[in-house]
Image (cartoon, rainbow, N blue to C red):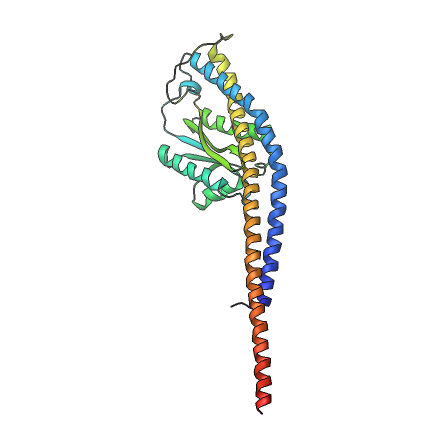
Length: 283
């Protein structure tokens, strides 16, 4: 059994860890509130852009690769993760979903990685990365989304990829982030759905489409980055709260052990004193 002194050292170490976890939880909670507000403000705009894109696509005619696609020989997958860990299963679940998507679509798919966790994951598995983006996952800007979006557009325009998928965590709550797969390009829906025409386009749907697609891709990436940032801070806040609670529980258990060790030590000393006194009396 460890001595009372060893247990005291262990308790002090765990208490210091609990303070660190608590500080990280506080920082994450502040960042989470800001990121959550950004997501809620941006969602209506992103949904409207997506609906408009689908509406234009449903009315376009002709043989535009951006719309109707082409023979699928190459697939590109863009995975959005965080730059840092300590966020529970936030990064792991979107990476697992990416692996599953690659197995379903193309094991040799071009891989684009955003976030250091994704970069480390794919490099460890020796998956060649077509492009890497890091350093902004916890507080992305629209310029970051434009940079990622232009890269994905280039892969499609240069025929390096015939399909482009985006994999990210959709923010549901601080406790729940759901991995999502979205096909960005071509923009036509993967399954036929009935569409209703709500408006006419001038000059024509095809011309509008060519101008709209880059903005659409940027907007979808922008929304995905915002969803990921809110999910990251929420997941980290939750993970750090659980870590703090676990550390405090461990401190209580160790304190109980230490008190028992001290009591046993005191009892042993008393027995030694009594034994010594009896020996002197007998002598």
